[in-house]
Length: 532
Image 1: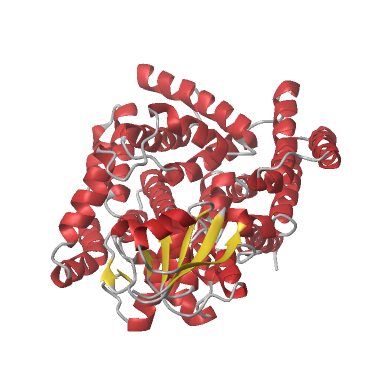
Image 2: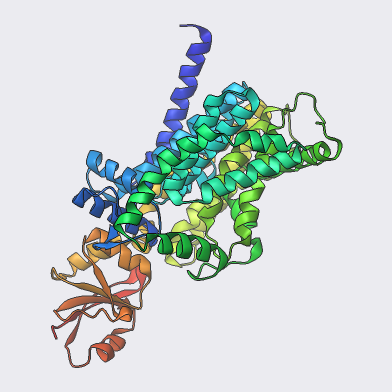
């Protein structure tokens, strides 16, 4: 075995270990959270139970908000591991890991020597970790889209058509993952980069007939099949959940125009300082290139300008949208990680103030993790806990600073991984029970069983959708909602916000309403309602 191959094996082993920790370790430490995770997990379970690869259903009814790719992947996970909440998260973890490897090999080819910096920057970014551990469509889309854009650059740099074929194929998978947003963003980014280069031929050379045929061969079969089986699919998916979601506040996700600025800054933690510096440098170089038609650096192949365009356009695009959620700009995060790594690789040192700010951010990660339990429970920190937070923050900041000062900038990635790993370990072990109690319906279901809730209908009244969809998955049964006039005629359990027992009685009239228990961590009460 030659030295180069041995180094590659060692680097891949390190990446595998880091990905295993950040994306797979403790996937079931707390239950499915929010409304989307349990809903997607349940849809995949129903498809799995029916062996229906085409029509996603929830409680037997077609659910047409998202395409089918995530459900297929969760189905595969269920087949391998069984139906578990953590199994629903495995596809996101797998796609995140695959994306890190793509970044590694891309940089190994086009920025030899920087591949480990890029891989470790990507794997430890807050958004990559968060969405890489969630049962949602965001990571499958971001991973396939980012891989597609890196393949496009590889084609642009080498003129090898194989890379362009990969570009079209991966965009098609992106369409199956979340819809037309993948090719829409790709068109905008490639067009903007061609404009920046004063070379419109870059865009038109990208329009490759065999690529279009490959794209449609992968993406169209399911779309045609679902439209044939469910004729309302086009209206619900394309009109309501794409056009109206973008142009209106139909789904009540309105945020200010600047919403994605802080989201992006938080997404790149703990690398935010260096990401901003890399973007500023790339911006200056890109503006000069645009004005004079040449690079400020004869060795600059335009990659940094391409990455900057790739970062900015999704942020601008979704800032215009009336509907905003944090995961929408996830496709920009891999580009930011690569740009940050490229910036750091080209530097022998950074200023003392920059390093101090980065170290404070690293310390802040520890502080944030340590405060999570008290923030979730909405209780003030004890004096002892406050001391731990302050001490932990200071020690980690000093440790990161010392490691880099003694070992040089090439130790930055290793030093920065220390607080990220400690913060993750704390959240997935000591803090996990609190996160589970406060955020997941898994603990609500456990409390229902402990309270002796009978098997049968469950209803909710005045509670978040998270509880409704969460119980739908954990009990594997439809959950009625009083607000939709879905009041079961049979005896049933109803879950309400604390203090709303009187409202239940007012709704059900003469039917007997008996207290069954409560769940203080989520401010819920359980009542048994007699049959009609």
